[in-house]
Every structure is written in structure tokens, then in C-alpha cells.
Length: 212
Image (tube, rainbow, N blue to C red; front, side, top):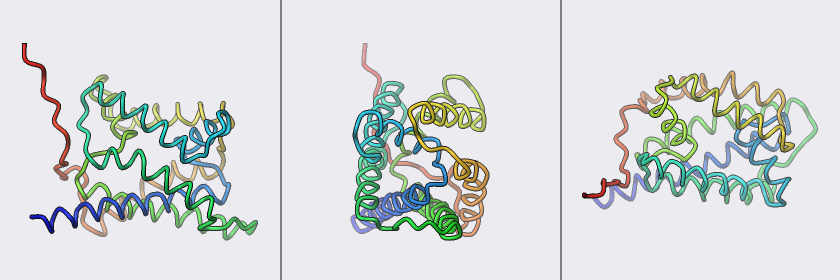
């Protein structure tokens, strides 16, 4: 049992590590960011912190919100908040993938980032230690409103993109590419590895109602 736990924790950490690599690959080409990353970039520019620190700050706020509404949270949720933002700063500051003006290189790096995110999502979600705070917010809104996932995701990510734009975050062709291709890339990879994200039984902290 202990060795199995170590394997799943290792899977979680490797998944979050690769997720950070994937996001870095979409940031470096400067083609336009995913909605949440645009918001993080805009926020970082406004208050003088790094994009990774902005990601952590937003994650903490969302964590408080989803905890208030008693969404299931796990170790993966907590690590998601801190580790991805921290690693993004490490990778960007140390130029893990240096910028190059070649348009072919930039598009290749961007699409490679989406593929890495798909693999990372399989590892991270498959570890079964809870959804990230942004997914937790989506689930909270769905439960409270009854809206389908497609509508909820568009509204939340559309709002993140709008606020990111207003704060000076980068939107562009890359933003459109993520909207169009990230979902299908995730679907293709999940089918290749025969993975059903909905079948995962997450190990989460249990919120017990107060006794009267």
C-alpha cells in the first residue's frame, strides 16, 4: 500500500511538473496566451510580481472560494496552486525554452506545449488527488447554476480572458489555437491511453457538516 501511494504521489508531482513545462511552452512563443494565463500576465504587470506569483495568488483566492462552497479538495489541489506557479517562474527565468523569432519554431513550441499539457493532465488527474482550483471553480458554478460544462467553461474562461485583456495580458492567435485544439488534443491522448477522467475516484479532504 505504501509503495502504491508513493507511485501515485510521484505521478501527481511529475504531472504538475510537466503541466508547468507545457504552460511555459505556450508562454515563450508570444503568440497569445490561454485565458487564465493572460489574466495572470496582466495581473503580474499591474502589481509588479512574476506571472508565476500571479498564478499562485489567483489560485489561493479560488481555493478559498471553492472551499467556502465545500467543493472536494485534495493534496493535488494544494500542490496545483503552488507548484505550477513556482515552476513556471523557474523555467521562464532560466529560459528553459529560449525565445526565437522564427515563426515556425514559435508555432512548433506552442503546439508542443499543448501536447505536453495533455500528457500532464493524464498524469495529474489520474493520480486521483483532487482537481485544481480553476476546475474546482467550474464545478462549483455548475453545481450552483445547473449550467452545462461547455457553457460554464466558456463563461469562466471568457471572463478570465476579458479581465486579462483589460489588465494588459497577451491575447492573440495562440488564444484561439488553445480554444480550438487543446480539447481535441486532450481527447486524442486520453483515447490513446484508454483514460476516462470521469472514472477517477479522487482522494479528497472531507468536509463534515457541523452538528447541531
